[in-house]
Amino acid sequence: MRPSDLLHSRPEGLYCPPGDFYIDPVRPVDRALITHGHSDHARPGHAKVLATRQTLDIMAIRCGPDFAGTTQAMPLGEKIRLGDVTVSFHPAGHVLGSAQISVERNGMRIVASGDYKRAGDPTCTAFEVVRCDVFISEATFALPVFRHPDASQEIGKLLKSTRQFPERAHLVGAYALGKAQRVMRLLRDQGYDKPIYIHGALTRLSEYYQSQGVDLGDLRPATVEDGDKADFAGAIIVAPSATFADRWARRFPDPLAAFASGWMRIRQRAKQGGVELPLVVSDHSDWDELTATITETGAGEVWVTHGREEALVRWCELNGIAARPLHLVGYEDEGD
Ligand SMILES: [Zn+2]
Image 1: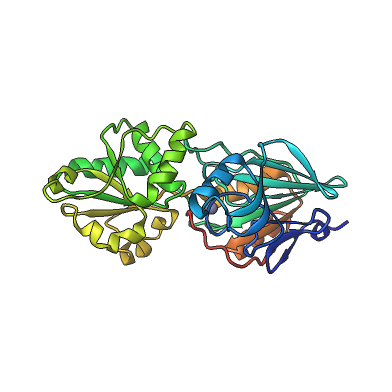
Image 2: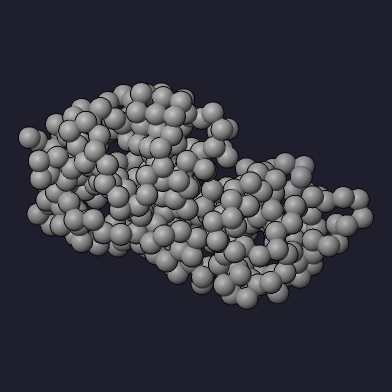
């Protein structure tokens, strides 16, 4: 059996013929295994969905309770038989509920890691190395120039700015799933105990994180009524960055725009987006994390997907590991 007999790409997504299922399909299919709740991986409309309990809950919050025909929750580390293959889920350290999916048949194991990171994150279970024959890796930040700094150091810059500019509202752009909650938890870890104001788009997911034991402290709706504008002086408001252009954002006192994203490593990108305070906080692996992880899995072969495939493929080849890009379409790193 060749690895491509066990998993290969189809227009719908990554397909396993002997198990008759897809991993993170981009089109509706009969059976989907989902790595995590970001919208490019977790789409509604599949007949059967297998994912971790938290990913299923997140999909229901984001897509509505009828997002799939039937669902089955997969506990981390447990094995299940699907057709002729054995499947298990393992933590990916990306966002709450995120998992790598191991697919095994006749002694061959392929691990589809979805999106993952190795840096510490108090809002989700840490990545677990799974030894395998073929490792499928994302490549969002797969260039040596990407080396993410310590996230708490970046959050320290935000706190420093609120002290320097106590009259300005600090608007922090962050993806609604994962990044926003991580930023809030990191603020709490540094002793920030004032209320954090959140955009309505973050309410249900943040409440869900709290229900799963991730303490985000005192969260309040970021709504400006007549007269209370001054309450937001020096306050931290977390919102999807797309809302910064809305009338909503202009009601805050002298707003200072920050954005928490791995892309903030590129100065030009911050400038173009009108970001005054770039915070390099990423939920994806940087170059060192990607290469270290590939080595640790012991994989003899690596398939690289969504992102800078060429550089990582080249690194693998230089290090004696067979590698090729896996041309999957429809993924846009929602939670970078
Ligand atoms: Zn993701």
